[in-house]
Amino acid sequence: MDPWVWAVLLMMLAMGLAILEVFFPSGGVLGFLTICAAVAAIVMGFQSGTAIGAGVLAAILLGLPVIIVVALKYWPETPVGRRMLLLAPTSDEVLPDSPEQKRRKSLIGKVGRAKSQMLPAGAITIEGRTIDAVSEGMAIEAGQPVEVIEVRANRVVVRPVEAEPPAGGGDELLAQPIEDPFDEEPA
Image (cartoon, rainbow, N blue to C red; front, side, top):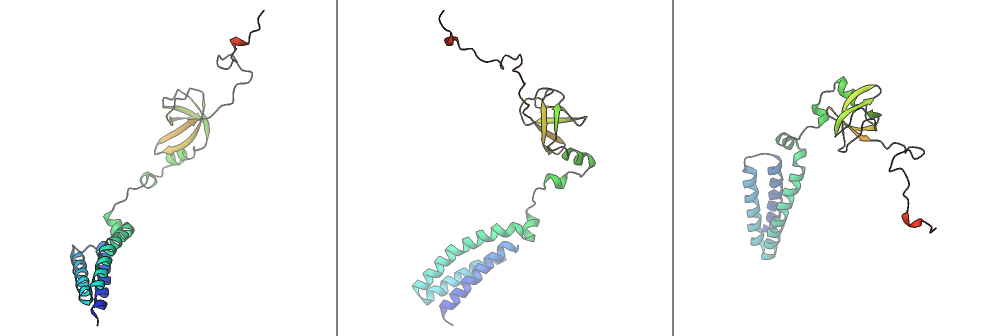
């Protein structure tokens, strides 16, 4: 067999061993075999000719890092990767599925009224029940309509609902029109 064939076969063996080293913990044995196969491929390539040797060397120098990075990308999805990398559980996996939690989650989207001033925590009333809640960060006045937007663990998060503007302008100072002092006609 020609030396260039051995060079190509050893190069492919080195790439395969590099992938195996990523997926199977071997204590460095597969890594050592990868290096040996890569060096042997380069030597056999240069015995076949300078151009083939340079090509094998370039393929190994460029190919091995790319193969290792791609293999490491898929490693967490393998059984060994899942055992080595402990993923953080979601709140649904950790929290008990109690009737109280189901009742809180059923409040999402419902509208109630703030029973007390919320700075940002306070009490709200929904369907005749008083519930401790937290606003999204803004102050909410007592009596203002609020909507439940989220339930995080045991915390009910609300946001104010835009109430309809008062009809007739009311007696509020800000609801009155502004008088322009320059519109006066000379007498």
